[in-house]
Length: 119
Image (cartoon, rainbow, N blue to C red; front, side, top):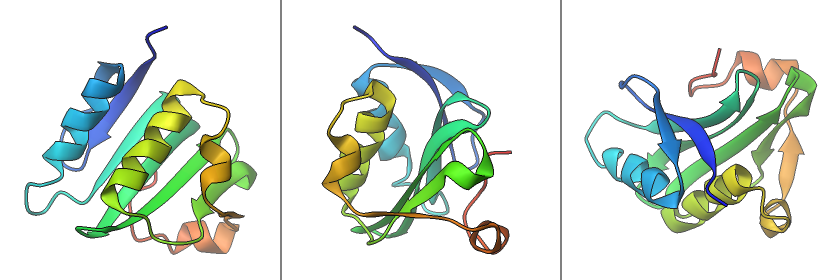
């Protein structure tokens, strides 16, 4: 089954997306200097995002509704792993969540977040 979602690349308007090829294209857009993050969403408060600190240093987060269900991967991920995690979240693959360690973010973490919050 094809998964539909919305993708927003840093500096660009959100666009509808469908399937993994759209995610791959969005990740490629982050190769442009000055574009550091992308957000994929199914609803306003149901999203995942990745922030590029360096070519192989990606911070991945996801949020399931309210702010008390916002999580960040404990360690930075490779670009490939970040893409796999985002696709796992989009597609609802059962094992995506267990592939890395996650930490629930506190309100203090979220207020000091350096990347964009999907508001």
